Length: 101
Image 1 (cartoon, rainbow, N blue to C red):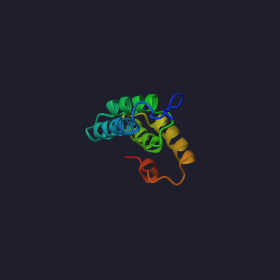
Image 2 (image 1 turned 90 degrees about the vertical axis):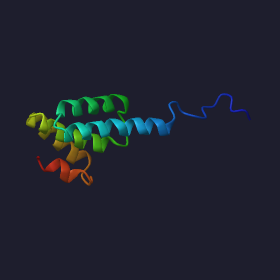
Image 3 (image 1 turned 90 degrees about the horizontal axis):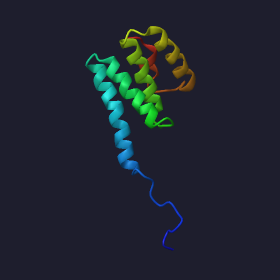
């Protein structure tokens, strides 16, 4: 059993991929903290493009609501907030999303 014909290790390595994924969310949080919502939205768009089915989609969406609010896009933020609450009704991020900053 030499493993021929099987896929034994995904590429990229799951740990490295997960670290890169978390780094994009960290960039978004940092940008928000520095008052740079456009940079936060860019990092979140990159995350969505690279990891569309991420287990961190809940956090990504919450950050996106905050970034849209901070960018002065309240209508988009409200629409995304409604989708977030529908998709993640018991989210630990729900209070963050529901309370406009």
